[in-house]
Image 1 (cartoon, rainbow, N blue to C red):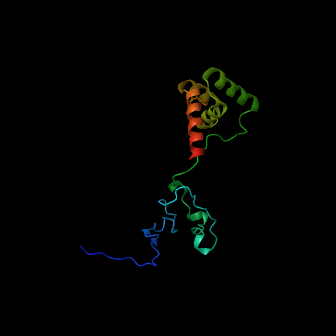
Image 2: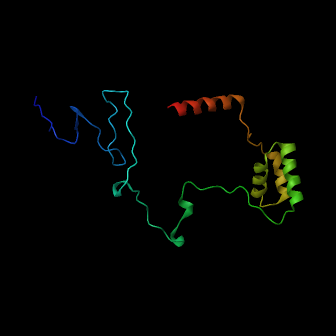
Image 3: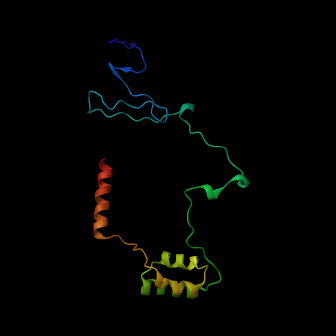
Length: 152
């Protein structure tokens, strides 16, 4: 068996132990196995060229392909002048009172039917809206997880 000695002035040597190498972002992280576990590493704001984000070049609109992006918002409502305000309010009241929809869900159904009130009203009965309110159990679980996350 052959033994190899490490250099005393090596960047990887620290108190006789090997320190962590660079993290995925290229910066050295504090050693988590310090002898004194009660000391908290001091976070610093890093300033300078080495710590700047690399931004991609701006693409002209003609070269952009939004359909290839994974995270795209889904439009669920777009107002129209074709429906009088009073009829729109009546539709929302019907969707809420008779079928249990909230306002956003009712408008989403109307938008799905391209602002055709009659088709949207007929389709309200075909779908069960997802409840917008949390159960007591869901609220308790959320509070517990939230408080646990704050302490961690």
